[in-house]
Length: 308
Figure 1 (tube, rainbow, N blue to C red):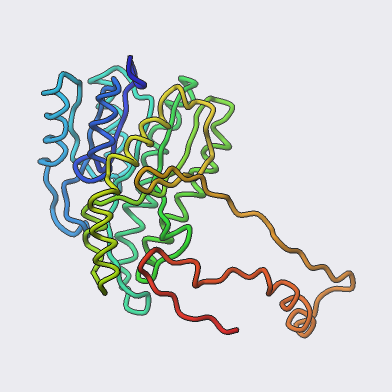
Figure 2 (figure 1 turned 180 degrees about the vertical axis):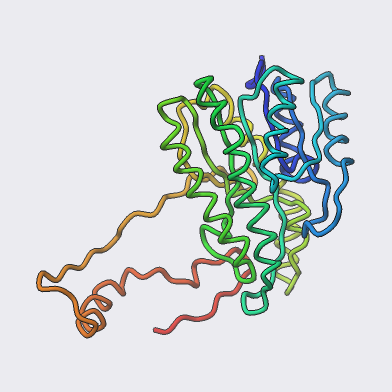
């Protein structure tokens, strides 16, 4: 018995990286899989190809599983509705969405173009909206549905050169949380994962020094795409029906549960605040608990020193 026996799963970005392993592992666990992948390059600026999605679907079928491919873009809501209809037509329904589809256009913010911003937001943030919007009514009607969205430490912590990517990924965490809140009464659950894995995305990060080269070597050997994929498949299975609204991480064999923002300090002035009193009283009282941006970066990144 597999964890997803009798279930139908849509995997976006399923032709490469983590998405590829999500599709393969979901099939190994008994799911019928719609493998979606535009087949475009890492920056999403080429025409794309049906090849990657069909290659993965063919691998599943060759192993005795059931899968179909789809090469439409998650940025097109009508196309995503088409993926849902494809799942219904081919397999009789849809029960879960795993959504790692993504692109990168890394550049320092002061050099970022509108096109760099729009492209990344379209795939990650709008793409997440689209896959959820195209499926939420079905999941509510059948009183059963699961989402695994993909956030990133670039959003949760911050990473220099990724303002577009980090903003989208932080937005996805908020989207997932609210879908979980609204979906609870209909047994619709939603979680998100901030994965670290050796994929074409992480391979594209420049090596800046010897320490970064050593980290890359370790990542290639020990931090694989199948590890977050296996966790994602587990979280959309019926056995995880009680898990929703959480932010997880995966790095090698480490599974991480992240805290979520809550107030840590409140200062009150009954007679009201002035600009002067805010600067002289409120800020100094809160300052000891300010977050240190030097702790906010990904491994290997360098944050600017903050004023004392």
